[in-house]
Each structure stands twice: as structure tokens, then as C-alpha cells.
Length: 270
Image 1 (cartoon, rainbow, N blue to C red):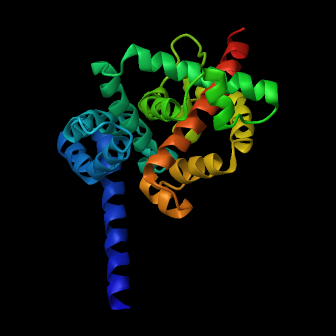
Image 2: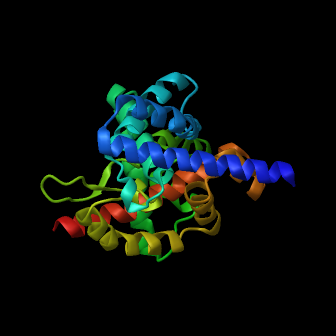
């Protein structure tokens, strides 16, 4: 009991100290205080880098991901409005993840052929669902794409990386000077600013409907990964299948969502 009370006391002391540092930094811009904030939240970068690394080839250096993420943390600290009462961790993780993906995109290691296949997969899924009035099965997708089971599995594996990066790509047009809405903004609480919030409402209903009609397992994976913070390996343990199978289902879910939201983008732009 005494140990629990002591831990709670330490947590409160840490929160109070962070609050003091935030007020000092926002008032004075003191570099020393900023450094204390960076060190206090550096674990967020390591966490985000670890999550992103799950979907990447082993050839991608984890230290590079951390380096990219630090830029996102710095940006989040400088732009965060402590007075709004928003939890910094939620605010920062979106920007850290975005910085990591921006860094990956800058080196452009994904072949154009794989990007093309990813777009084809999303569009085929959307077309079949429109025709069938329900999500297409693997068999129907393979027939539409004229692929063997082995080829279809390989396609899902390749596209997994593209879908990871495409979370940061715009899905709806923005006003001049405004950032465009991204799928990651819909799956996490990362929006700020009245224009982005208003635009979010136009897409959120469509996304909610798209998630609702996902096959049961895909819907569960989206919930556990983006809202509960589980890794693909942990989700595999919950559902009782391998991590590679969870990765395939995750890829299919994102492809379905992108296909629907790309059609919505056409409507918003028109």
C-alpha cells in the first residue's frame, strides 16, 4: 500500500513539474526548459518509432526512424498550446509519426510499381464493394486481379508498406494555405485549427460508415491498433492468428478505407 501511494506521489510530482516547465517555456522560450521537455517526452519518439518499424522491412534502420521522430517531437513542443488543456502525448504522437513517415518518404525507397499496385488494390476493392453491396472476399479479389493465392498474398505484403506511408497522404482537398486532411487524422486525435476540424466532420461520417461495414476481423484490427494501441503481434494473440496474417488483414482494411475515401475526395473536389 505504501509503495502504491509513493508511486502515485511521484507521478503527481512529475505532472506538476511538467506543468511548470510548460508555463515557463511558453512564457520565456528558455532553451534549458525546452531541453527538459524534450528529455521528458523522448520516450514518445521511441514508442512511435517502434510502432512504425513493425510494418517495415528489416533493412530500415531503427535509429533513422528515431532521428526522424525527434524532429516531430521538437515541432510538437514548439507548437503545443498548453493552455488548451489537450493532452500533449496525443498531440505529439501524431506529429512524431508524421515526421517519421515524412523521413521515410523523403528517401523514396518504395518502388513505383508497388505504389501502383497499392492504388489498383484500393480501387478494385472499392469497385467490387460498390457492385456487390458488401466487402469483396479474397477469392473475388483474386479473380478481379487475376492473381493466384500466392501472388495475392505477396501483393498484400508489398502493399503493407505503401499503406503505412499513405496514412499521411491527403484524402480531401484543403483551402489555400491549409494542410490537407489525411487518413491518420481520422484514425487518431491529431487535428487542430477550425478549418481542419470543420473539414474533419465532412469525412468522419463517411469513414465511420466505411469502418462499420468492414469484415468483422478487419474492423476489430483497426479498433485495436489505432484506438487501443496494440501492436500487430499483440492483436494476433488476441484473435489467435499469426502476426503476418494480422498484417495482411490490416493491409486489406486500409485499402478498403482508402478506396472509399478516394471516391469521397472526388466528390469534395468536384
